[in-house]
Amino acid sequence: MQEDKVTALERQVFDFLGYQWAPILANFIHIIVVILGLFGTIQYRPRYIVVYAVWAAVWVTWNVFIICFYLEVGGLSKDRSLLTFNLSQHRSWWEEHGPGCLHEGAATAGLGAVHGQSLVVGAGCAMAYSYMETLHSGLQILLALLGFVYGCYVVSVLTEEEDSFDFIGGFDPFPLYHVNEKPSSLLSKQAYLKRKSQNLIPTITGDFNTASLKDI
Image 1: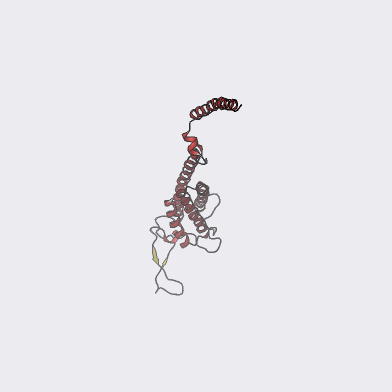
Image 2: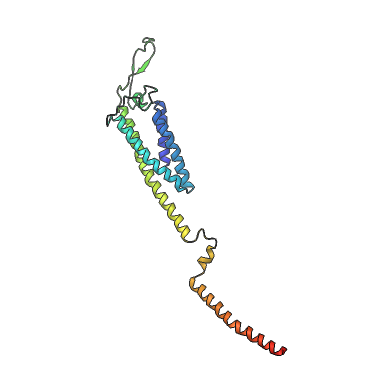
């Protein structure tokens, strides 16, 4: 879960730089749920871990959508402003700052050729920005699947521990009595007390009759 949180923070930074508002919101929710899952693991709270496991499945679905979006699968187009809620024309920070992208000298409008460099989108990039986003989403899918499996395992272990604790009398108000006393010893004690009471009744009756005769 810790690696999942670190990679989510890294992705959140680049989404902020690219003004990708939908991924920013999704990353924020993901970070909160990961923290909740870590808290549940440390404090032995299975319900929190179940919430994380359910969200991990949703997170996988979201990243599959991101991959389809950037690879233009299923009629989706990466040129649409879907991830920015139509608030800006930005598509991805990696579009202009991908690995190997070069700055070429170009005259800036209104400033002539005196001032510097403007970035030519996609010039000399070693990898297209759509593939960079796909790699990020693929990494998130892998970590989410590992987190889902780990969460299910932890929930099963905690549930088994709670069941075994209940079975040995963990919530019994007199656990030591039931654990230490064996059924055979309890039965023998009951038989002994019964025989003792039966022997005591004739003795008391005989003493009472003797005392009555003396009084007469």
